[in-house]
View 1 (cartoon, helix red, strand yellow):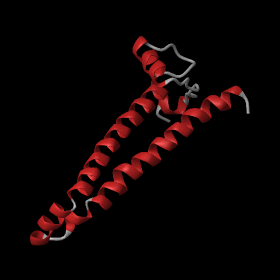
View 2 (tube, helix red, strand yellow):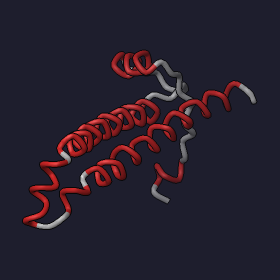
View 3 (tube, helix red, strand yellow):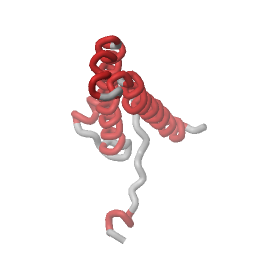
View 4 (cartoon, helix red, strand yellow):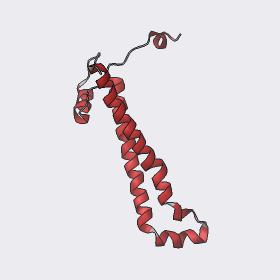
Length: 116
């Protein structure tokens, strides 16, 4: 594996892991933990009171999923706007430094630019 393939694989693995974590913590776990709230009108009040720690963990899981979503958007932003073939602005370079990664160059397609 050469250096260019290595520089492409590292961000791809990171994005894949972040996406899987976001799906687990944002789309599955909160709804599983909020199951006592879905019992109907008179029943859900007593079930929610009995399982309040479970519901709190579900809410915290939702907040964690939101943080993962923000980290994914920042990670995608730095890959899209700052490939190695172009010069980075100071803010983009700072984001790269904070994330601790280097990004692979993005190949430009002339058909997208010309509208063909």
